[in-house]
Image (cartoon, rainbow, N blue to C red; front, side, top):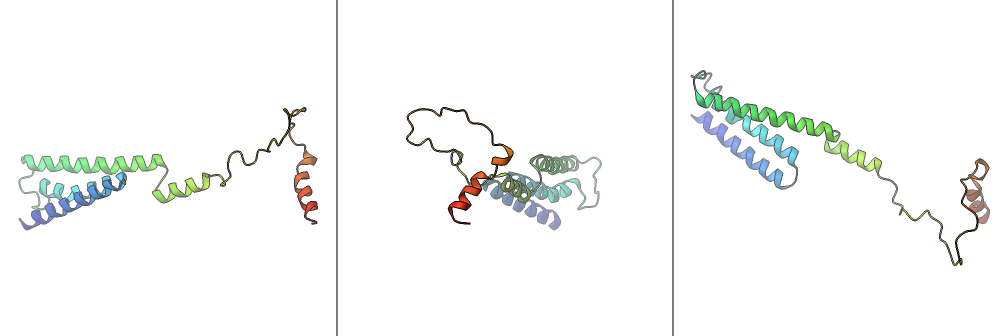
Amino acid sequence: MIAETVCSAVSAAGLGIAAVTAYRKRFLAATRIAAYSLVPIGLVMTGVVEWLADTAFSPTAWAGFGVLGVAWVLFTSTRVVERRRGGTRKERRAARAAARPDAVAPAASAPSLGQGAGPATRPATPPRGDDDFSDIEAILKKHGI
């Protein structure tokens, strides 16, 4: 009797924590907490706490097995979603930081057109092998280096 009450209280507290976690927009963690909190009540409902007392023909026991099945489905679904997203939150954050380009505006590297009257007379050509460092050399000469 006391064991069932304690397990019920632990399950209720766990579901409350899961609700608070879901409110904070951490749904995978909330689902995992809910799965953990359903295990004690599932064990009570299956009769494991009473050590198989009338388990075979008890509808409560079979309902407990159903609750344990729901907990297992919740566990496995969170693992599947976590693996599809690419690991834990820390790993995703590190991957996102590595994939981010430097903080340069998209138009910052484009040359300004200036006060010209019309478009350029010659088309832009890709840089050749010997012109790759000409800009850098010009800047260094300008500064006397």
